[in-house]
Length: 265
Figure (cartoon, rainbow, N blue to C red):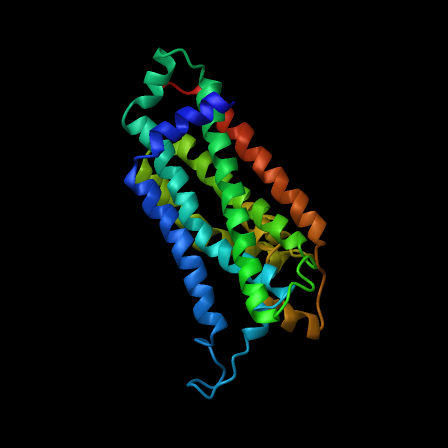
């Protein structure tokens, strides 16, 4: 396992695109949230408006709020996974791995392990940011570990997005096409399907679609607050969303593995 990761690291450590996309995630996520926490979005507009998102950066609300914004910026990491994987096909390095004695499953598991490591790293980074923002806005660490399960939800969301990106990469093998389909599905197609399914079912079963299941674990805080004050229709429990997201990750893994073992290289 460590040998596979070491080889993957040798492939990407001098790859500029890797550092650019990682850098965008590392830099933009805290900058974006810093601007919001300091009142860049105010009700009423101008400096005299109400900074209605300021409390979202205190403990324990900071975990859900950062997790929601992180679910947007995780697109950078997902696209990175697509580029790294499809490059193996584009530059024929996947075949060189086989010539060097790898099995196809080892090649696949190297990419899966890399995806898991990336999900762990971005989750740790989110935790560090949450601790900093929470401390600055709360004045102490009291309540820091309340709602801490939302950090675990972010890890699961990251794994869901990265797993889906890896599956598309193995299936399509073309960088541009895979990225285009990933963005089209995540931003448009799934939202349309979710709306249609929820309209014709007695429960919001459209929320159980591949990426939406993990998105439901980290709803936008203000939207969640508004829903809690209004009469709600039938809902699905959070643990159900978590189990469905895990299930989708397993589907990506086994589907990608089957495609890799069946298709020619």
